Length: 149
Image: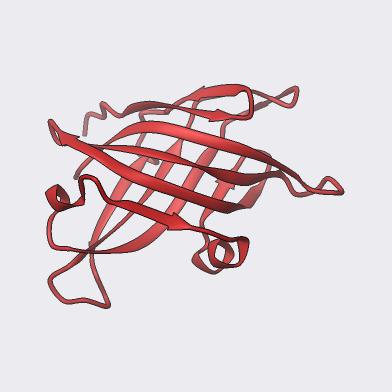
């Protein structure tokens, strides 16, 4: 499969380019809860860059959200959100920088579907170093295009 996924993520003041690799993928599944509807989730892996003086390859894992829609085209304009750490931990939504850490809150919007890809913007706050005391958090945002497969 040829990948043509692209985008950028900002964590604090640092930028990371989307890694167009098999691990970066959109998930559209049949809902287990609502017959005839789909769920949406995604994994986004980013290329090596420097964060806090270390070379890292960050990633974001956003697990399934119920859409109450039956096709990808109906998702355009929809926003999905997690408002607190408890919900993010229960959902197992994570960001990886030094280790897998919870995303404290986020929202993402499906902006468009073009040429077999979905355009997503996500922003929120994530734990970037859970080993520090107190733990370090940073705002993040990403603007990405993922293949619909």
